[in-house]
Image 1 (tube, helix red, strand yellow):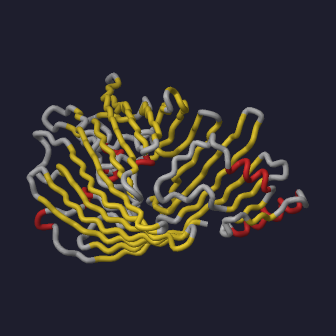
Image 2: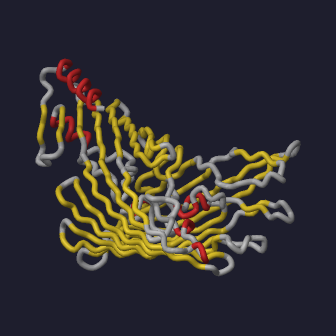
Image 3: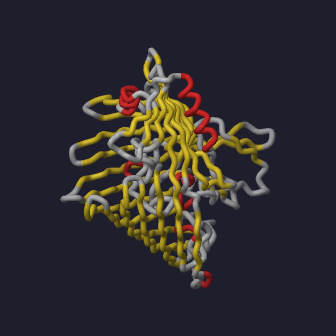
Length: 415
C-alpha cells in the first residue's frame, strides 16, 4: 500500500510542477493539491454519506486533487485494536448478541479473553466534477469478514441516484449510538445492502424522502423433507422519510420483502414480509442527548445483529409443511452525556422478541435484553479510547434463562 501511494504522489509531481503540499489548521491532515480545489470538494453537500457513530470523520485522510481541480482522491484509514473479556463462553468475540448466551445448565462461568484488529478500516473516495454535477465513488473495507477481509461500503452516486452497497434505508444508522462492541445495541435493526436508491431532499416542509430496491438474501433453512427450491426474484422495497429539527431528528422507515420458492414441477410461491421502524435523536439538557428506536415486522430477522445467520426469517410447520414468517420486534433507548469536550458516556437498554409457534422447540429463543455502558475519551484529534460493559440475558420458550457479561476495550487512530 505504501508503494502505491508513493507512485501516485510521484506521478502527480511529475505531471504538474505547480502542485503544492498544503498543511491546513488540522496539523494531522495532509493535503496534496491546490487548496482552492480541496476546499471546493470538501464543501460539496451533494454526497450521500451516512456516517455511523465511530466512522472516520470527513476531514480526516490524505486528499489528492488533480491539477485541473476536477478530481479528488481521498485515502482514509483507521487502525483499531479491541480487547474483550467474557465471563461466559459466547460464540462471537467482537459482537455481543443475546442469542449466543447459554441457558440452563450450560450457563456456567467460563472466563476468557480476546485481542483482535477486525475493526481496522481502509477506504478510498473519489469525487469527479462533470458538467452535470459531481460523480462520487466510495469504497471502504474492514477485516471482520469470514475470511478476514470484508467490504463495508462500495457505491457510486450521481445526483439523486446511488448504486452499490451501503446502509439499508431500514437501518437508520444516525440514530444508533456509539458502542465499543462491533455490533449494535440489542433491538437495533442494522444492515448494509446492495441497492438502487433515489433520494428527494426537502420533499415538503424540510422532510427528505428516500426510496430503494435492496437485495438482502433471506436467512432460513429448509428441511430435506421438502422438495422446494428457494430463490430470490423480487428485491426488497424500502422507503425512509426523515427531518432534522432544532431539537434533534426523526426517521420513519418501511420495507416489503418477498421470499420466493418453487416445488418440483410446480408454480412459484411467494411469502410477503414487511417491516417498520421509527427512531429519534433528541437533544436534552446541557450536554445530554437521547437516542430511541423501535422496529418490527415479519420475515426480517436477518436485519438484527442478534439473529444474524440463525435461519429465523422463515420457519416451517413440521405437520403441514407450511412456511411461516415469524414476527420480530426490537427497541432500545440510550442516554448520552458529554462530561467535557473530550469525554462522553452513554447508557443503553435494548430488548428483542421473537414470535414462537405451537411447534416451536422448548429450547428455542423467545426474548433477550441487555444493558450497556460506554465511555469514550478523545486523546488527541483522530485518536480515541473506549471502554464498554455489557450485561444481557436470554430467555427460551420454556422460560429457561441465561445471563452473560462482557467487558470491551477499544483504542484506535483515524489517519
